[in-house]
Length: 209
Image (cartoon, rainbow, N blue to C red; front, side):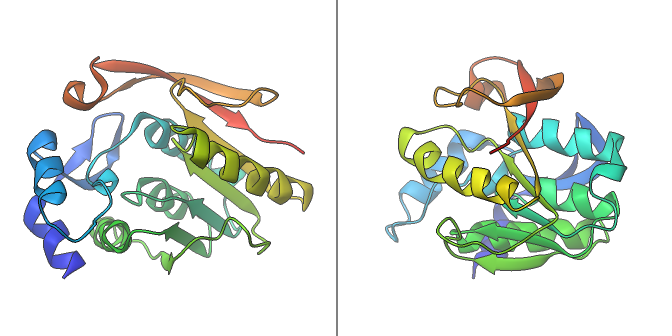
């Protein structure tokens, strides 16, 4: 069901900022949002159907600097469409784990990995209280709410404390924490229907303890 729904409501297309990656994306963002809201199954918003700015910047950074992830285990936290996980796999990371609490997100990640000829492992559920070890932890656009930021940041700091390279992509969301190390800045094209602007200046940050 989730995989069929994803395929029925998206079309594969290159990501403008990462043209080497094909992503299944909604042609009509607002229409898809309305479909999921009217579904009556308490389905989360379709974050998986779009290339959000934070994920695009993170994916671009990884592809431009593959040594950051090549040969290392990677967790793509709150994977959404799976864009960052696909980029990590393309850059030589192994194994790559795409994680989300939304089964539709994992279906999108599966479809997008297949479309790009890479392999990612799918893990459904909330990992934020766990302490599994990864060489690299990646998180695109996770500071969009106070609640999410309050849970994600301690997880990311713990991962950094265990020796993981922890990178986040963020376009200036309201709950971006202080004390992060700037790695790169990009002007990322985004859906104006979702973001109200055609381009978002987006930063890749490193999280430390």
